[in-house]
Image 1 (cartoon, one colour):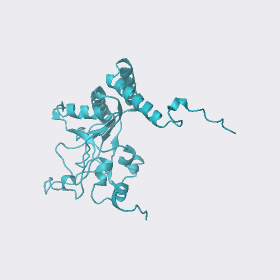
Image 2: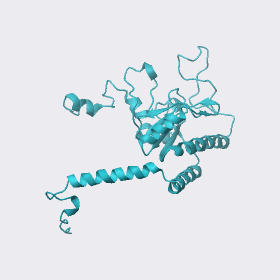
Image 3: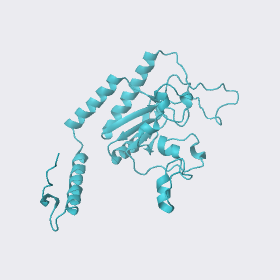
Image 4: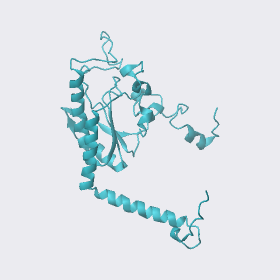
Length: 257
Protein backbone atom coordinates (compact mmCIF):
# COMPACT_ATOMS: atom_id res chain seq x y z
CA UNK A 1 0.00 0.00 0.00
CA UNK A 2 1.33 3.42 -0.96
CA UNK A 3 2.23 5.74 1.89
CA UNK A 4 1.48 9.41 1.29
CA UNK A 5 2.48 10.82 4.64
CA UNK A 6 0.02 12.93 6.55
CA UNK A 7 -1.76 16.26 6.52
CA UNK A 8 -2.17 18.30 3.37
CA UNK A 9 0.20 16.15 1.29
CA UNK A 10 -1.91 13.07 1.96
CA UNK A 11 -5.16 14.85 1.04
CA UNK A 12 -3.62 16.21 -2.16
CA UNK A 13 -2.36 12.75 -3.14
CA UNK A 14 -5.75 11.04 -2.80
CA UNK A 15 -7.89 13.93 -4.11
CA UNK A 16 -10.46 12.62 -6.58
CA UNK A 17 -9.46 8.98 -6.09
CA UNK A 18 -11.54 6.18 -4.61
CA UNK A 19 -9.65 6.70 -1.33
CA UNK A 20 -11.00 10.25 -1.11
CA UNK A 21 -13.92 9.99 1.32
CA UNK A 22 -14.94 13.64 0.89
CA UNK A 23 -15.07 14.33 -2.85
CA UNK A 24 -16.93 12.20 -5.40
CA UNK A 25 -14.39 10.54 -7.68
CA UNK A 26 -17.09 9.73 -10.25
CA UNK A 27 -18.13 13.36 -10.59
CA UNK A 28 -14.55 14.54 -10.96
CA UNK A 29 -13.67 11.86 -13.51
CA UNK A 30 -16.95 11.41 -15.42
CA UNK A 31 -18.51 14.83 -14.93
CA UNK A 32 -21.73 13.23 -13.60
CA UNK A 33 -22.85 10.98 -10.75
CA UNK A 34 -25.85 8.66 -10.72
CA UNK A 35 -26.65 9.68 -7.13
CA UNK A 36 -26.95 13.34 -8.06
CA UNK A 37 -27.57 15.67 -5.14
CA UNK A 38 -28.15 12.66 -2.87
CA UNK A 39 -24.51 11.56 -3.19
CA UNK A 40 -22.75 11.17 0.16
CA UNK A 41 -19.64 12.86 -1.25
CA UNK A 42 -19.14 16.40 -2.49
CA UNK A 43 -19.63 17.43 -6.10
CA UNK A 44 -17.33 20.43 -6.38
CA UNK A 45 -18.29 22.33 -9.52
CA UNK A 46 -15.30 24.12 -11.04
CA UNK A 47 -15.12 27.88 -11.15
CA UNK A 48 -12.78 27.68 -14.14
CA UNK A 49 -12.54 24.91 -16.72
CA UNK A 50 -11.77 24.32 -20.38
CA UNK A 51 -14.67 21.85 -20.50
CA UNK A 52 -18.41 22.44 -20.49
CA UNK A 53 -21.35 20.07 -20.53
CA UNK A 54 -24.74 20.53 -22.17
CA UNK A 55 -27.04 18.44 -20.01
CA UNK A 56 -29.41 15.99 -21.77
CA UNK A 57 -29.11 17.93 -25.03
CA UNK A 58 -29.12 15.00 -27.49
CA UNK A 59 -32.50 13.29 -27.86
CA UNK A 60 -31.86 9.81 -29.23
CA UNK A 61 -34.91 8.84 -31.34
CA UNK A 62 -34.60 5.28 -30.02
CA UNK A 63 -35.55 6.41 -26.51
CA UNK A 64 -39.14 6.96 -25.40
CA UNK A 65 -39.86 10.63 -24.74
CA UNK A 66 -40.12 11.25 -21.03
CA UNK A 67 -38.62 7.89 -20.06
CA UNK A 68 -36.29 7.82 -17.07
CA UNK A 69 -33.99 5.31 -15.44
CA UNK A 70 -34.48 6.88 -12.02
CA UNK A 71 -36.43 4.34 -9.90
CA UNK A 72 -37.82 7.17 -7.76
CA UNK A 73 -39.45 8.79 -10.80
CA UNK A 74 -40.66 5.73 -12.73
CA UNK A 75 -44.22 4.46 -12.15
CA UNK A 76 -44.43 1.25 -10.16
CA UNK A 77 -46.12 -0.62 -13.02
CA UNK A 78 -43.73 0.69 -15.69
CA UNK A 79 -41.89 -2.01 -17.67
CA UNK A 80 -38.11 -2.24 -17.25
CA UNK A 81 -36.19 0.27 -19.33
CA UNK A 82 -34.20 -1.38 -22.11
CA UNK A 83 -30.46 -0.60 -21.65
CA UNK A 84 -29.97 -1.01 -25.42
CA UNK A 85 -33.18 0.39 -26.96
CA UNK A 86 -33.95 0.06 -30.63
CA UNK A 87 -35.85 2.33 -32.98
CA UNK A 88 -38.08 2.00 -36.01
CA UNK A 89 -35.53 4.16 -37.81
CA UNK A 90 -32.85 2.35 -39.77
CA UNK A 91 -29.22 2.60 -38.66
CA UNK A 92 -28.51 4.95 -41.55
CA UNK A 93 -31.44 7.21 -40.61
CA UNK A 94 -30.35 7.22 -36.97
CA UNK A 95 -26.79 8.16 -37.95
CA UNK A 96 -28.03 10.94 -40.24
CA UNK A 97 -30.20 12.26 -37.40
CA UNK A 98 -27.21 12.27 -35.06
CA UNK A 99 -24.87 13.82 -37.64
CA UNK A 100 -27.31 16.72 -38.06
CA UNK A 101 -27.38 17.30 -34.31
CA UNK A 102 -23.59 17.02 -34.03
CA UNK A 103 -23.03 19.51 -36.85
CA UNK A 104 -25.52 22.01 -35.39
CA UNK A 105 -23.91 21.98 -31.95
CA UNK A 106 -20.34 21.93 -33.25
CA UNK A 107 -20.94 24.93 -35.51
CA UNK A 108 -22.36 26.90 -32.58
CA UNK A 109 -19.58 26.01 -30.16
CA UNK A 110 -16.74 27.04 -32.48
CA UNK A 111 -18.12 30.59 -32.38
CA UNK A 112 -16.81 30.89 -28.81
CA UNK A 113 -13.23 29.80 -29.43
CA UNK A 114 -10.92 26.99 -30.46
CA UNK A 115 -12.91 23.78 -29.89
CA UNK A 116 -10.47 20.94 -29.20
CA UNK A 117 -12.94 18.07 -28.83
CA UNK A 118 -16.67 17.39 -28.53
CA UNK A 119 -18.29 14.18 -27.31
CA UNK A 120 -21.92 13.06 -27.06
CA UNK A 121 -23.06 10.44 -24.53
CA UNK A 122 -25.41 7.72 -25.72
CA UNK A 123 -26.07 6.31 -22.24
CA UNK A 124 -29.54 5.60 -20.85
CA UNK A 125 -29.03 6.70 -17.22
CA UNK A 126 -30.56 10.06 -16.30
CA UNK A 127 -27.24 11.56 -15.23
CA UNK A 128 -25.58 10.93 -18.62
CA UNK A 129 -28.31 10.57 -21.24
CA UNK A 130 -27.72 12.99 -24.11
CA UNK A 131 -24.93 14.91 -22.35
CA UNK A 132 -22.63 16.83 -24.69
CA UNK A 133 -19.09 17.52 -23.46
CA UNK A 134 -16.94 20.12 -25.21
CA UNK A 135 -13.36 21.10 -24.38
CA UNK A 136 -11.92 24.45 -25.50
CA UNK A 137 -8.37 25.68 -25.66
CA UNK A 138 -8.92 28.34 -22.98
CA UNK A 139 -11.08 28.61 -19.88
CA UNK A 140 -12.62 31.96 -20.83
CA UNK A 141 -13.88 30.45 -24.10
CA UNK A 142 -15.75 27.75 -22.20
CA UNK A 143 -17.19 30.32 -19.80
CA UNK A 144 -18.47 32.52 -22.64
CA UNK A 145 -20.12 29.50 -24.20
CA UNK A 146 -21.83 28.56 -20.92
CA UNK A 147 -23.11 32.10 -20.38
CA UNK A 148 -24.56 32.29 -23.89
CA UNK A 149 -25.94 28.76 -24.23
CA UNK A 150 -27.94 29.05 -21.02
CA UNK A 151 -30.05 31.65 -22.84
CA UNK A 152 -30.59 29.43 -25.88
CA UNK A 153 -33.05 26.76 -27.04
CA UNK A 154 -32.57 23.80 -29.36
CA UNK A 155 -35.34 21.69 -30.97
CA UNK A 156 -37.96 23.38 -28.81
CA UNK A 157 -36.11 22.68 -25.55
CA UNK A 158 -34.03 25.02 -23.35
CA UNK A 159 -30.33 24.30 -23.10
CA UNK A 160 -28.65 23.81 -19.72
CA UNK A 161 -24.89 24.34 -19.73
CA UNK A 162 -22.31 24.34 -16.96
CA UNK A 163 -18.57 23.97 -16.54
CA UNK A 164 -17.36 20.40 -16.10
CA UNK A 165 -14.36 19.01 -14.18
CA UNK A 166 -13.60 16.45 -16.93
CA UNK A 167 -10.13 16.96 -18.42
CA UNK A 168 -9.20 13.51 -19.75
CA UNK A 169 -11.93 11.82 -21.78
CA UNK A 170 -9.88 8.64 -22.03
CA UNK A 171 -10.55 8.17 -18.32
CA UNK A 172 -14.22 9.14 -18.63
CA UNK A 173 -15.05 6.71 -21.44
CA UNK A 174 -15.92 3.05 -20.97
CA UNK A 175 -13.05 1.00 -22.39
CA UNK A 176 -15.14 -2.15 -22.39
CA UNK A 177 -17.79 -0.47 -24.52
CA UNK A 178 -15.16 0.60 -27.03
CA UNK A 179 -14.27 -3.10 -27.37
CA UNK A 180 -17.95 -4.14 -27.49
CA UNK A 181 -17.71 -5.95 -24.16
CA UNK A 182 -19.65 -3.78 -21.68
CA UNK A 183 -22.31 -5.87 -19.92
CA UNK A 184 -24.14 -2.86 -18.45
CA UNK A 185 -25.08 -1.40 -21.80
CA UNK A 186 -26.59 2.07 -21.67
CA UNK A 187 -26.81 1.92 -17.85
CA UNK A 188 -23.02 2.02 -17.53
CA UNK A 189 -21.74 4.90 -15.39
CA UNK A 190 -18.89 5.65 -17.78
CA UNK A 191 -19.34 7.48 -21.07
CA UNK A 192 -20.73 5.43 -23.96
CA UNK A 193 -20.09 7.80 -26.83
CA UNK A 194 -21.89 8.08 -30.13
CA UNK A 195 -19.56 9.14 -32.93
CA UNK A 196 -20.29 11.27 -35.98
CA UNK A 197 -19.51 10.10 -39.48
CA UNK A 198 -15.69 10.41 -39.85
CA UNK A 199 -15.94 12.47 -43.04
CA UNK A 200 -18.26 14.95 -41.29
CA UNK A 201 -15.92 15.36 -38.32
CA UNK A 202 -12.94 15.84 -40.64
CA UNK A 203 -14.80 18.54 -42.59
CA UNK A 204 -15.94 20.35 -39.43
CA UNK A 205 -12.39 20.48 -38.10
CA UNK A 206 -11.07 21.69 -41.45
CA UNK A 207 -13.65 24.47 -41.56
CA UNK A 208 -12.71 25.54 -38.03
CA UNK A 209 -9.02 25.77 -38.98
CA UNK A 210 -9.84 27.83 -42.08
CA UNK A 211 -12.14 30.16 -40.15
CA UNK A 212 -9.56 30.74 -37.40
CA UNK A 213 -6.91 31.48 -40.02
CA UNK A 214 -9.11 33.95 -41.92
CA UNK A 215 -10.64 35.56 -38.83
CA UNK A 216 -8.23 35.18 -35.91
CA UNK A 217 -9.51 35.89 -32.43
CA UNK A 218 -8.00 39.18 -31.09
CA UNK A 219 -7.65 37.50 -27.69
CA UNK A 220 -5.21 35.01 -29.21
CA UNK A 221 -2.77 37.83 -29.92
CA UNK A 222 -3.17 39.12 -26.36
CA UNK A 223 -2.50 35.66 -24.95
CA UNK A 224 0.54 35.26 -27.20
CA UNK A 225 2.02 38.54 -25.94
CA UNK A 226 1.33 37.53 -22.33
CA UNK A 227 3.01 34.17 -22.83
CA UNK A 228 6.02 35.84 -24.47
CA UNK A 229 6.24 38.33 -21.60
CA UNK A 230 6.05 35.66 -18.92
CA UNK A 231 8.48 33.51 -20.87
CA UNK A 232 11.01 36.36 -21.06
CA UNK A 233 10.67 37.00 -17.32
CA UNK A 234 11.16 33.31 -16.59
CA UNK A 235 14.25 33.11 -18.78
CA UNK A 236 15.64 36.24 -17.15
CA UNK A 237 15.08 34.88 -13.66
CA UNK A 238 16.74 31.59 -14.60
CA UNK A 239 19.87 33.12 -16.12
CA UNK A 240 23.11 31.44 -15.11
CA UNK A 241 25.47 34.41 -15.19
CA UNK A 242 24.98 37.10 -12.52
CA UNK A 243 23.50 40.27 -13.93
CA UNK A 244 22.84 38.69 -17.33
CA UNK A 245 19.79 37.36 -19.11
CA UNK A 246 19.28 33.93 -20.53
CA UNK A 247 20.64 34.96 -23.91
CA UNK A 248 24.02 35.96 -22.37
CA UNK A 249 24.83 32.47 -21.21
CA UNK A 250 27.71 30.71 -22.91
CA UNK A 251 26.70 27.94 -25.33
CA UNK A 252 26.70 24.38 -24.00
CA UNK A 253 29.69 22.15 -24.77
CA UNK A 254 29.37 19.98 -27.88
CA UNK A 255 27.77 16.58 -27.42
CA UNK A 256 30.05 13.55 -27.57
CA UNK A 257 28.90 10.46 -29.39
